[in-house]
Image 1 (tube, rainbow, N blue to C red):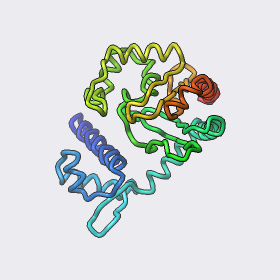
Image 2 (cartoon, one colour; image 1 turned 180 degrees about the vertical axis):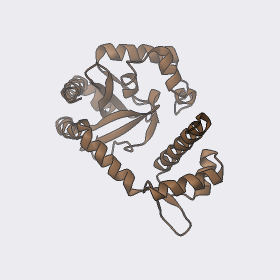
Image 3 (cartoon, rainbow, N blue to C red; image 1 turned 30 degrees about the vertical axis):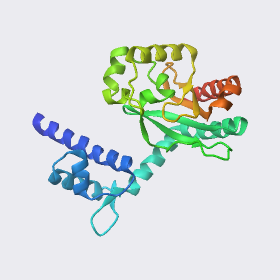
Image 4 (cartoon, one colour; image 1 turned 90 degrees about the vertical axis):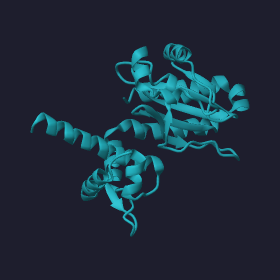
Amino acid sequence: MKEGQIRKRARGIDRAFDILDHLRSVKVSQRPAEIAQALGAPTSTIYDLISVLLEHGMLEVTDANGSVFLGRRVYFLGLAYREYFDLTREAGVVLDEITATTKETSQFCMLDGNKYTVALQREGSRPFRISANVGERTPIPWTASGRLLLGHLGDDEIRDLIPADDFVLPDGSHTDFDAYIAEIRQAAKDGFFSFDSIVDTFTHCFAAPIRDQNGVCVATVCIVAPKDDARKNYAQYRDALKSAGDKLSHNV
């Protein structure tokens, strides 16, 4: 295969993943024309790629209008990954223990490309709900885990990884890059980070790292608690998370 053909095929593969990521993000089925508009891609290209993805079971037609959504093969691939990646199974058990002990919402979080996502969650036993949408992609600087998951990267690598718009917070203010880097370096030393949530006004977020054999933070365990309870039980929640992170690090 000639170099030009290789590059063209690579671009097609990238665009196919864009389609899958887009449907995951919107969480509803869409017509090919809608997907093409959202991605800013030629409609003919999107139709061709959707046809291929349908043939391979990565997408499924959901209605008479030709709308498509993620196919069951994606689900089975996810099951295979979970079977191979023991950490997710162990994390579920640890989250159950954290929530049983603290009564707070606990989470297992990871990077998904240049975004942060909650991979697993156990809701706390409270009359009001504190939770996040599992699988939703969130700007890394908005999160406590975002101070731990990038600790192995250099300053320039972090700047290149995170889109500029992701430093804009929900209230329209901007995260200072140098201050953010300082928090990342301190969190790496402390093996822990917590702060008042940037996304809402009444919760405090705690995060501790899960490290691989090289000391790289590959995931985090987190607690999301009301601010008053977080202040009252700060040491307990911090110690519970650090212990859980150390426990899970032995399984990486």
